[in-house]
Amino acid sequence: MQYASQSVAKPYFVGALGLFVVQILFGLIMGTQYVVGDFLFPAIPFDTAKMVHTNALIVWLLLGFMGASYYLVPEESETELHSPRLAIALFWIFLIAVLLTVVGYLTMTYSNLAKITGNEYWPTMGRLYLEQPTITKIGIVIVALGFLYNLGMTILKGRKTVVSSVLMIGLIGLAVLFLFAFYNPANLALDKYYWWWVVHLWVEGVWELIMASILAFVLIKITGVDREVIEKWLYVIIAVTLITGILGTGHHYFWIGTPEYWQWWGSIFSAIEPIPFFIMVVFAFNVINRRRRDHPNKAATLWALGTAVMAFLGAGVWGFMHTLAPINYYTHGTQITAAHGHLAFYGAYVLVVLTMISYAMPQLRGQGAAASNRTQVMEMWSFWLMSVAMVFMVLFLTAAGILQVWLQRYGADPQPFMAVQQEVALFYWARLLAGFVFLIGLVVYLASFFAKGEPVPEKPAAQAAG
Amino acid sequence: MSEVFTKSMARNIFYGGSLFFILLFLALTFDTHGTLPERTNTGNLTEQVAHGKEVWEENNCTGCHTLHGEGSFFAPELGNVYTRFGSKKAIKAWIRSQPTGIPGRRQMPNFDLTEEELDAIAAFLKWADEMDTAGWPPNVQG
Image (tube, rainbow over the protein chains, first blue to last red):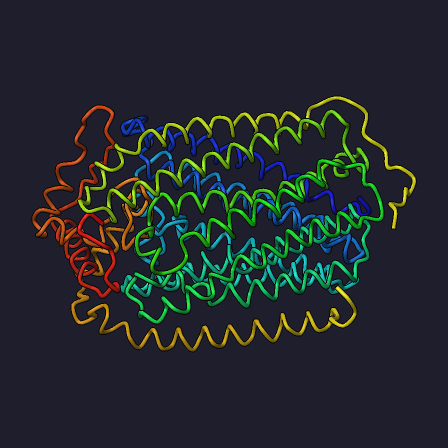
């Protein structure tokens, strides 16, 4: 850590990991409800558990992005953060708003929450991922504005780099696109059309810019490869991301009331959406192979490579699997969608945040470049436990999804939804089991922060060959 | 990558390409807007239907169900429930009769809806069923 103000990242990372635990616990509740339908009913109905699961995910990733930005921008700009106090204040405002919202989800019916928060005056609730009361959404905008102001002022007074510029473009895009969450027309088709401007243009657009810039930053640090080389890769990745991803939104416009021409635009452009993820894999392996130093934080290197590979599998391969319109006609809104969502979010965004935490935490905790060997070994175990568990969850969901398509939509004698759900229950049990393995991985991960042992010191510039 | 392809070329492709595709996307969006009145029968989008959408939202229906394939995969598709059930009356009766209380089965809460809200949500689901979704879903099971 080169600048004292980078330390504001630490509470963001701790808060993010706390919500990660919440997310997984509610995921396990949902996984159980899939096979024991009345589990915890009526105390925690499925929709409540799902809101907590997905909202906790989104918020902890946002906290992770913010922490990563507060760590990255001063170092890139070679100056202290504009206002560390603002950063800390915004952290508490955000965290308290989120916790109040979650308490609201859990302690009252959703319609009551809507009433109490005055949803009738500006209805924005009740749409997937955007379930937060309107007042929470306004809070998110205020926090985002303060955050962007703080980073913007820091970048303006310091060195301008491609990494911080791309990060900033991604973050501004994130904030601007979120404004569409406030637009909720009565026409369902129009509502869905702009809902995707938040959801798709986030995760298959501007979030990828944030992800690529964080990955580029960590790779510059751990490989010592020339910045010029990495910056060129970064531009190529984000260029292909937006060239494919913007019209790729069309793959959500096949069956929601929008014109049939979207089946062509959506199929063609989303078919090439895996390319930026593939370039990221090539990029990560390429620069690590050409590294000019051996960074003592081996765990961070594993997380970084894992991010590139799992993002390609989850977002790229599992996305492509059901993105062509003639296939999507049968798979739309099945467990195949769920499988893709899980692997994509885990591979791209969970792992990139954990990569940054792995790289930054030893420095934030005053351990120097890397934590102890014991910590790193535990981190690596948790990487493999969580990643393998996730891959199995996704394979089971994919199997369930293929059966679902066959029994409910494609076969000669289509059966009702609930009948099909019972037929595929075996795969839901298997998915639940994999979910518990994931939890074990998460526990090992959290325990790694408490592992004993001497930090691994940085070796005196041991030049790798070439 | 060799020096034939420079960083500034990559940067220009990023800015130029993004701008081009943003403009193309906006043009297609504009065109889509023009098709929606007919495809979604906005003539039938009454105040009652709009109110039904609010009831749909304020009870977080999408937290379990899909509507035109979007939402959650825990409970049946409702974009074509009007076709599947055959009448608004049947839809209302179903909502009113929840939860079933059958041990081990997935349960839908009772949302305590008024008669007026039940009428509204049934009208909303009928309107949604009648929009042109390019032939989706493949069959009546959703």
